[in-house]
Image (cartoon, rainbow, N blue to C red; front, side, top):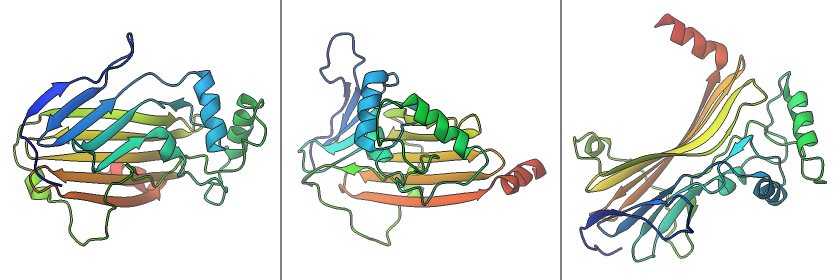
Length: 243
């Protein structure tokens, strides 16, 4: 991607009256957009349930998103709830086997009893390996040994823009929490996005699925890293108590 101008300005995209405007910042040929709206209402939730084929989380922010794109529209990536949930295991093979899973399943069947063949066995922790939705016609990511330059990110550069956007959240039938969120910070020469799936299943497990996206505005280089970690609940508790 060729270098564009060096302007840095906050603006807002045109939206319907009464609807919260997305945050938009343009920096050196890139546009960063974040949208934060209330949780979806019943009708769009039912529609999403039909499309996904699984019961959605308790709190789904289906209109929220984080988008990073070239102003020339030749590259872009978006993080949104639907595509993230579409990566949840729908076969049930990854479903956590714990005491409350059957009760949770029954509660979701009742909530969506008007939709046939939707609520099926699936990973009810909503664990996702989602790494973002690359825009059509964008150059695909390639495997590389190059890592995100942490030292550059440690510099005391001014923060032009920061935001945190929640995509979905579920309390796992009062047995913990599962949440997918995105944090993004934009500096004059680069940006870093962290998309994190965090799950705490009480007395069972902690789980993290992290996607980090680094963009260098000068070189137009984009690096994406994915990391998966989990640990027994009791082991984490013991480590925290020992500190």
